[in-house]
Length: 328
Image 1 (tube, rainbow, N blue to C red):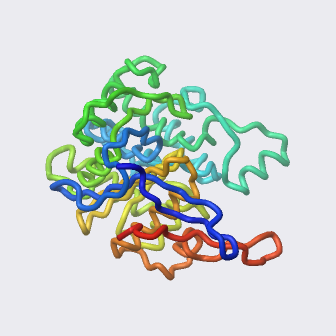
Image 2 (image 1 turned 60 degrees about the horizontal axis):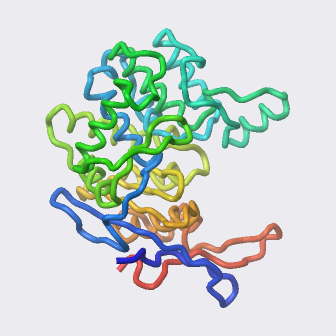
């Protein structure tokens, strides 16, 4: 099966652009609904950070370090590098007796407008704390201290990354065909869209064993602290707030998105083939509306799907809408 048409951009009375992709909804027993090719192999990118945080929880490292739910949400985050994110990661590292130089994620200017403006106007360089993955890397460092591994914890054969791979293959129920290096320098293991949705369904249906308790706590942390998962104005944060904490959602680079719906026992994964983030945000919005957990009229939903696109003068120029048949 080919990719499925999902999101259209209309300008005036003409369809200007079309975004296609693959999406799967799973429950504890398997696939519930699918569009496109469920077996399409993808890199989940940052959408799988809750999987990457599982060894941190299962090993006992998180409890040994006394991590709070706010810090666990940050371990699953692609944050905006706002002052609160930077301070939270800095405090986390300090509590471990570590510092910014122990990170291996690299630095980039923060997405948060206020922090970006502060750095720019003061002619101050960003640091690794501003990296959107610095929370995940603080989690890696916490696990690494517990495992007593070497400093280069992002190397594929390092004990930290071996633990991540084992957890990833266990919850996707797939042997990964390989990995690519993510923007933050850590390995990103490939899987199918169905495998990623199956993993999210397992987070939505956690058992009472160690892994299940770890999954439950990570999901609850994300739902309780959506501001730490992304930031103000970001789709993950705004949609989780709009849903009142009934779901945990997470974006990934190159137009990947996942959702965990504990009350319904469902996991969702999608990939837009052209890598367009605006389309993945619109597509996850459509699926959340389809599943009855998001009000289509909520401003957060309207901002990503169906609502008007305005130009610099405030004129309506078009809108993003669902392609016919997506969702059913």
